[in-house]
Image (tube, rainbow, N blue to C red; front, side):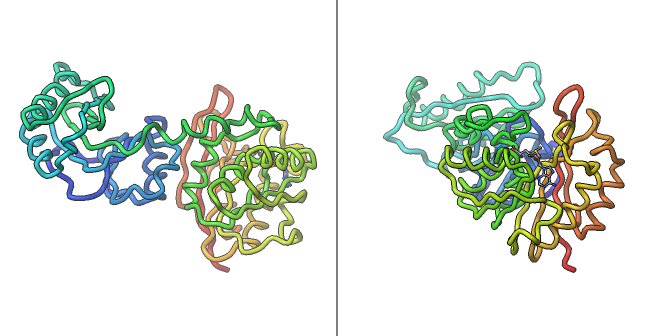
Length: 357
Ligand SMILES: C[S@@+](CC[C@H](N)C(=O)[O-])C[C@H]1O[C@@H](n2cnc3c(N)ncnc32)[C@H](O)[C@@H]1O
């Protein structure tokens, strides 16, 4: 990925590709998720990236909008660049148009979205288009960051995660405080590249399995606790997704008729949930070893690790000790992101690729 643009953006029409707007929640995870799904051509701002395609982005956890026929301009050159854009991207003359604007990033005094939208509306009217703000037939979306402007035609009616609200953990028949929300589960699957078959070796209530199976990925879950296994099965039935669920030990996966796994997503136990006698680091290290044996080729593991609120201690360990655990079990860490959770917990989302033995 190329770094954030330094700000010298003279107006240019993008011949192809898309502009993708992030939710603003976690910019570096947004960049990484889009890069994993479709490839980022350029990071333009913390919330806006340029891609060559929109493939897979309608399932992205951190995306708010995708703009086709994109253009990058500035407040100073808006009139010329919008006119040029309109000539090369004629809109449907039979449908009315509205311009929807929003601000993302720096706020510059004197720059008003409503005024910019009016300027664009004037150009559209002069070109013979009908403006209709209440029930437009088509939209142009304008994103404002300081003096920089980004626009195009929006492809999404709403952010993808809004479509998952019926599946949030608290709606499921079997719920525990450890249950992962669709947004975090999807994020892990997307960062891991959505290449099945998938294994969640500590599936708990099935938060990851529901999302992976709903995406059509062949999925298997394992949990040591029979109550969790029964609860996951109940949740899967409720969601209509199909996955295999096994009661077993994640440190002895090769005994469970599991092989050829290409993607692993999981969150290991933390706090009172680490109910086995093993201390968490030892348990985690054995799980990584065990996973290596049931995975094939360059499988990817993506996991959400509990940390101190500032992210410095991960499952009670220093970060370099965690890295050491991954590499000694045959996994090459290629990404990690800190996610603050609340006053007494943080999380570190880690991605690693299997090294061939
Ligand atoms: C944090 S929870 C997982 C939550 C899950 N992602 C969800 O959405 O509900 C961790 C799970 O690991 C399971 N577990 C603990 N030790 C295990 C082991 N040795 N093998 C398999 N599962 C284990 C616990 O029973 C618990 O359900």
